[in-house]
Image 1 (cartoon, one colour):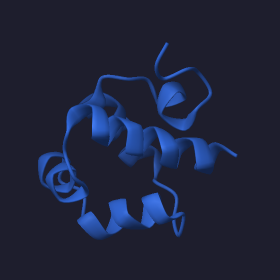
Image 2 (spheres, helix red, strand yellow; image 1 turned 90 degrees about the vertical axis):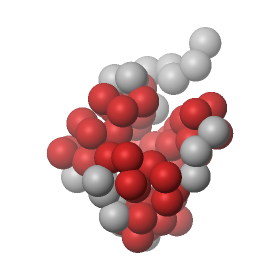
Image 3 (spheres, one colour; image 1 turned 90 degrees about the horizontal axis):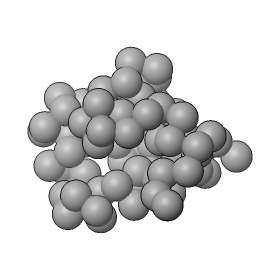
Length: 72
């Protein structure tokens, strides 16, 4: 369930920031293929990747993985 929430939240954050996977990859120095694998559900991000994404989007890891509400 957390993986489903993470994928949905990452998609929502990309839309909110109006950026694509490629731009996110470039800005956070994570490969675009890794981001694609997360969004397709093929792989899960490492804790280090979650920290990077949470910092980039200015959210908590709990919000990112759906343990807390991302948007009110």
